[in-house]
Length: 476
Ligand code: URP
Ligand code: ZN
Ligand code: ZN
Ligand code: ZN
Picture 1 (cartoon, protein in one colour):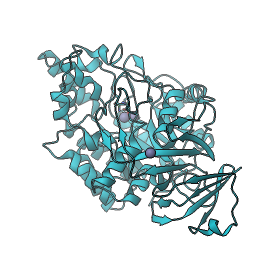
Picture 2 (tube, rainbow, N blue to C red):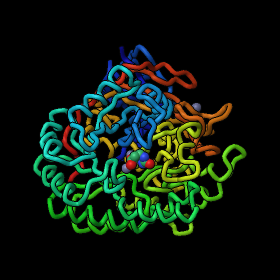
Picture 3 (cartoon, rainbow, N blue to C red):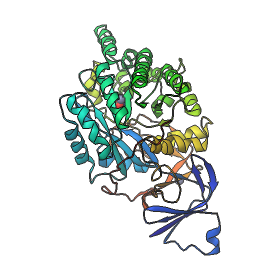
Picture 4 (tube, protein in one colour):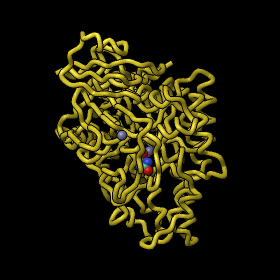
């Protein structure tokens, strides 16, 4: 089976060039000068006309939580529904998080995540390992992760009693990671201090969702980010800070990077576009001020008046932040977010965005925040390099997996939950209601197979394969 995508503009992280892309089976086999097909050498089984459109490597979303048990409930997307929604939005690989909780074994957590994902994914998937309890067993289990194709693991400086690690545990894990070549991913917020602030707010009757963001003050993110950097510096462990939202945290990353330390950061669309002020102002007939629960996530949305959103865009341009993931962790309002009515601490944390990342970031190209090549770099190429998938993923080049999106810059996408809008995630609302995108995901191909063709979905559960990842290809 050969496919020829012709007349399009191929966009890689290195730039854009008019080229035809030839796919044989699951693999890209050639980039051809435009028109060479007109000479008659190529006789493909399927031809896709990409005239006037961009041909980009499929999105790699390196931070998702399908079916995550959290806050007394489970994230509402399964691997089946979540990866289907991802495919609709031009994302052809995810890296989800297998979970080990305090007192549990890493091996069991990992096996449980394989069981949830195996045979259910529409697109390729890999895992990071959450280590929610650093002890002698989990430290030992870290030695087996590389063989499992898991070359990164996540620790939490937040959520005491759930996933939290103290500094002694972090130090031990980082020492082990430095030896093994594992990339340490850090949820950098000072959880114990946040819990005190949250308790004080609730006891003053400040229970609305908005106060989640007040309790999780930027100082708590800056402080934890700095502490993580110093522990990484001491141990020599490469560090990747997840879901960065405070401009002061970015300053810490930039400071460490300028000294040559292997420190990296991601942000998420919510920290680029949404704000604490909008969350404060949110009201609905059904929920009143509890409407703001739709945007309860950690790290929290930040104040627009303080300029965090502008700083995130700036950092994406200057490479103080290297990539954009979603932290897709969807919960419905009904029966899920509602658990925290009357106490914001009980609202399950998370926003669903896996379907919209490519579009939301493309809108940054339209508004001049980032370049076309940087769009591809932030959403596909760097995630692939950072997490050991590059070559197969993250690039349109001979030998790469044929994960390809044909993106129409003259198309339009209305994001939202209602009639005529784009929404395939298993949620009863959209955190992105009303966002209008001056572009459109037209065709999505995963390892040579067309998953999305215009408005039609042609994917199926089980097409997606487990990605055994190599070591990070991004280290200094
Ligand atoms: O609010 C969030 N981010 N939920 C998912 C868990 C995490 O900390 O990434
Ligand atoms: Zn986190
Ligand atoms: Zn997360
Ligand atoms: Zn279109």
